[in-house]
Image 1 (cartoon, helix red, strand yellow):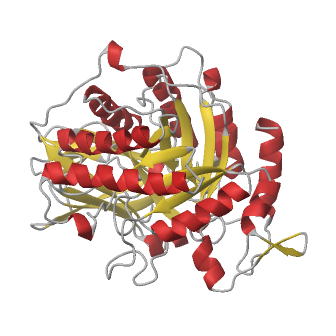
Image 2 (image 1 turned 180 degrees about the vertical axis):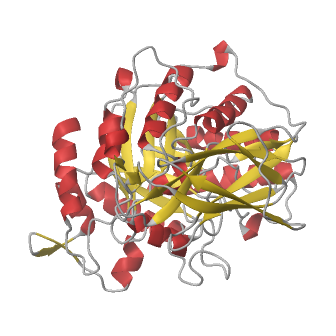
Length: 482
């Protein structure tokens, strides 16, 4: 999950949140939905950054499709300011236009062949706008900015207007299993790199193995990413090969030796795969599509077989990382729904052939974007993609408010009858866990914090000493898992 990582790291220090959920965000539930706004809003304060939610990041290039945008401000702790009032500019690079919430067109203050800029105002904490896609299949970059505050941006992918959209039949919506082992997890894939730099971790003044420390504070799952050939020149870890198969085998043994469960996250790339980039592995370049699907299946099966042979078979497997815009581009881009489904089925078949009992996750970076989440799952399920659990990323800078996250999860549970896991998050540690573990019908499988050893809202300082955030997990474990 590594889009524009330098800017992201800075902004997420502030736990930046999006905006209150729009009144037309769909929720499928008969019970009143709890209001979580007190968890992320304050009456007043000093604004530090702009933030905006785009409630869709995949749109049809038909000149009609619209996405709701909400622009607000947050303070240095990432709390939305309910009384904020200030001007801002919103710019669009690509074929799209901005329309006011009452559907009147705004007059641009600057227009060129590639960039258009409008002016607007936040009033009483929030401004709503519409983004209307044009007729060009491409990417649209939307940015909001104002003097002295950090800007915010989104990348929208537009797909052909004539793409075949499908909805699953009742028979295709199969009730997923209740996954007995609830997760309190941490992605610590950086650990071998940190240890190679000489970083040591401590608890109660004693130097200890980081994995054992996490276990002692309630964590029961470790998530590891795996790249195809990260040692390549343009890979994640040139020459050294961190997060390749060899390091994954070593880390998997450490995880299992500690008595913890393992979630393996296939990136299907030589480097970071996320909604803004899903680069095809160098070894798969030039393959015909049938060869590409075979290569993905063979690779998945080989990795899992080697893990199984050393006694460290993952308990759960992700077929791709944050794949709401597809994977293995260009063939598996979201604009090629049939191709994407074929690649996903190749991955799931490989998992089932190695161990039919392994839980399979589909992971989208769409914590609060319900319409786009259901678009993705409808089209994949209707094309025969099978899986056991829904995984979501929730970073407030991109994925809307806690209210939006809750509404989305409630709807997904009812629609698809699957467990849900917030498999990447960082901010709002207590709140995210409280929300997931209180989902109805015991469908909240759990959470997995992203890279808590050294990034963003971490739980150890730069010297490996524990921060107060580590001890949150003692409380979370006692409340929900003990």
